[in-house]
Length: 427
Image (cartoon, rainbow, N blue to C red; front, side, top):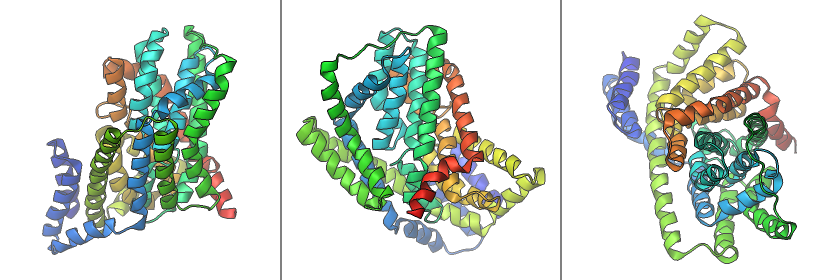
């Protein structure tokens, strides 16, 4: 009955359109009343979840991403990507993919990728003769790289929900899967370009190369500071986030000269809005997770899955299907905070490292961001492209197939995600 009250009330409130954080709190309070626990327990767990040093990295990475996103970085990364791959057939699509990986390494957000890069690339691709649905499809799928490659703040949320899994290891684990996904999408874009006879990109004059390379390198330095500093043991995640904010401010203000006082105020307001949502979700999910643990929900789900099969590979497939289905009905952050305490004990019992599971979780839920009915990255892309969700989603299906193939590789080949964390640990 306790499980029914906890899960049932959450689902009912969710279907009524109540904000997810409130659904989690109300479900926790109702369950606490049924179990005759003092309601102070709910408040204590909500406050304790915020008493973590790791949380400091979240507002700093959000702030760094907002500064870089508003400071003219996206156009410079597009120029650099165009110089690298733009000359090939379907070059603009490949430029889109590469730029999204670069930008994801700065903002750590798929929605920020889709809005910042999409606002430039989608109109540009349409102007060059690419279909609108294909332009949106490429942008939205490429934007998902932002939830995998560091400094994804969703990986920090996972670290908190998983009880303190190393953020440094998670950031390192996201690099190779992000590169694999980028290359896979580029190959798919090239094949589709040849098949559909999409145009080649324009060749950039050599006299512009120096300027493009310098400005592109300066734009990418933020990502290099974060990744290199963590990988070499120079910075912790929090320290790298603080350095990234300082560098982002300096480069956009004094080098690119696109940061103004008005933009700065808007950036702080937007950062505080996003942070308020994230912190409320973290605190609400902590109370919900406590009651799931008290009621042994993870064990119940694990035994239910084992009743279907004891085979490790079948269980992992079921786990991926479960996460993909969750991504269809909930946004990414609450799923991370609610599903991690349920699924992590399951995957560790079949021998999967929590770091590897974190990357698998990110890609599963990232696919949910481009899937109707609540895919936020899909909404952004369709709004920019001026087309319906249905039309763009149909065009996206081959690329989603590529993403699912990469997901299986990450699931069944642990070395793809774990090579760099192991190397970093050895060092």
